[in-house]
Length: 211
Image 1: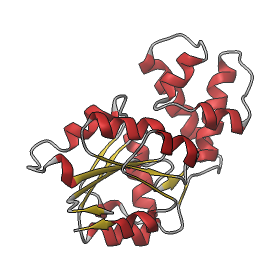
Image 2: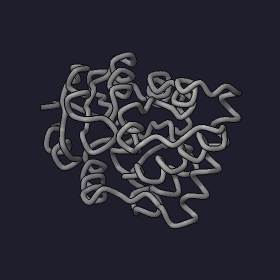
Image 3: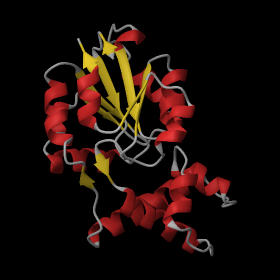
């Protein structure tokens, strides 16, 4: 159980928004634009990193991180416009509304901020979050930035994410860490990082947060 939590900092992709299909497609188009073959979805998700730029670098794609990220953003926008859009997890709206009545909610994500805000508005949850921090290349730094001037002890903060990199970022920022199995990394990988908690849904996470 997580007792005394005052601030929930949340990743977006794989936690609130199921964007695995459009993210996969956008990344594969970037690979193809560099003359590379597509990966299978299974290979992509098992090798996914904290940011698209790290993913490209690991595959040997060279170039400016800013240029590569802009390519990804363009392809992601195209994919969404073509109808392959992200969707909220079934319990997201209800759970976020409940949590917002108990704690402060903040989003920290490597996802482009404009997409975070647009998707939150589309899902009907934008007003529940006090702030959105997107484009994060170092989530631990972004978490600390989000908590500036909050006058909150790290023990009262939890970061929930769906990858091992989210758990590592939470630990580096010295806040509680929760892995959720609805996104990119399997439960076994999350548990190997020894987070404070691993949950199978936002509903289960909400039940674990106690003030």
